[in-house]
Image 1 (cartoon, helix red, strand yellow):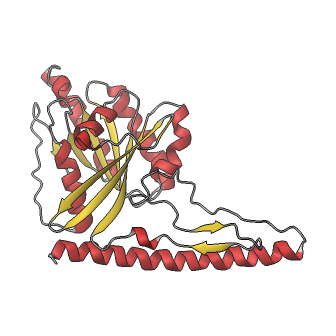
Image 2: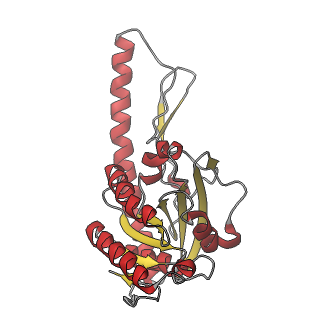
Length: 277
């Protein structure tokens, strides 16, 4: 087993142990609740306990609650866990894509996932879920990527989109300062539901951005760098059309999560795809 595969196994072991402790606590809570309900003469046949995350048909790559209460003939709830989905060489992680409409989130996602978009992937109005599985040094990483459309109606999905994510990508159109300024609100709202995810600020449509006057490029780049610093985020300029920094962003996330030696080169040159951290 490679060193990275050992890290994956250890990660899954810690997650499994944490899940069992959490499940036991929830079981005690629901069992006590059941006793109270029976004493009041208002029994329930069953009750579903979830974190409020919309489940995907792909059951092996989600951060949903692994605890459910299923109905039984005697009306008593029984708790189960889904530990059989956790392979020792595979880790399932969730990533969120946030930003205004028409900032290039879907194109960015399609460029990264390629032909791995499955027709069975879950799609709700305003929310798109896509899986991408990587093989890294003898282990597998399954990224479940949640893309929020970015309009007002889609904001109802924001808590579910952010919950349990290991990284949140805040995206803006490099040719639209309005979308850059709105990432402040996206960041503030996302942090209400997830304070531990790795923040990454991404300027899209770099191929259009370099057509702008050089002084305007400098102003936008300076503003983006200031926001990234305020968010304690890494900044990338990218282009889905020309595949600029798309794969590199996910490589950065993977390296950061698992402490994989990988040097990211800083680039602050105006007219080139900026990377700042």
